[in-house]
Length: 186
Image (cartoon, one colour):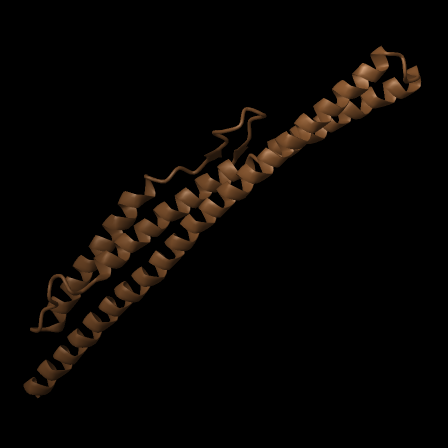
């Protein structure tokens, strides 16, 4: 009977070690993939926003040049005052739309902050999976009480990782770039 208890205990120990190591390794691989995807998404968003911003500014410059040409025609008296007023109204409307579009692009800065926070959370999860890795201290072969004590220690390491990470991630996202307005999320 004692041999069966030892055999069952060893089998349980081996299964727990296999489970913890598998969860740690598999989870770490998935988190590394997600982290790489988030970093790549941040780079893509940054490039897209830079191109959009440059395009909006180019449109704004072209409209300003067009307005200068119209102002020249007005100065020469070639346009009727009703047309001049209409062009001035359109100029103001275009300026408002361009300013609104550029302000709308500020979401990239905040999105970048969110992606950075997600990467920090992923790093925290990787730490938790590292704490689960049973390849460090060997689980005891003697009895279930020792196995439970070792599992409790692993649980404490996981808890410590979670507690350490909880205070390190900001909960607000603020606009840090583009002086067109001030936005705060969350």
